[in-house]
Length: 159
Image 1 (cartoon, rainbow, N blue to C red):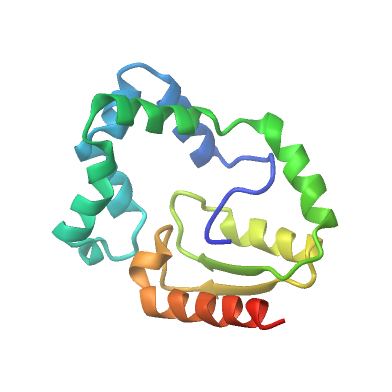
Image 2 (cartoon, rainbow, N blue to C red):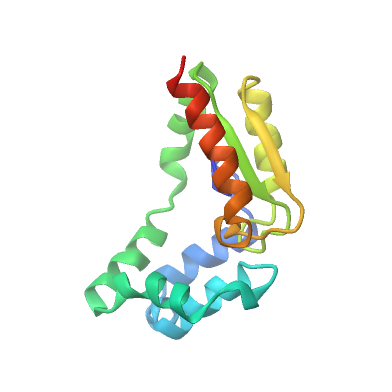
């Protein structure tokens, strides 16, 4: 797991995002190239790490208005109703789990509490907090995150 929602108690930041995705005008602004760039930059502790090439790669799938509408629909789809099933499944899951999150995530400001709760529900989970990372930790610490995931998947596949 990398900086994600798990439980149905959403922060105000998440509620605001869902509201923006549902609101005509705001939705188009949010999913516009400028809006997506703003989201990306805000999610990084060092916005300078977002190169023009990386930004272009993230924006490319959303060139068409239909793709941007689909992206807004995905945000709208972040509904409470599916989360109780996730929580029930989580408590029953016995497999290995690797959690890495950025402590300075402005998009999910409660991520540390969420991941502590996941750890309580999944005692077998290995959790690492990256203190100098935001929401897009795979961009801010690609070697660190990649190394952790490589080791995790190597261990899982060798069992």
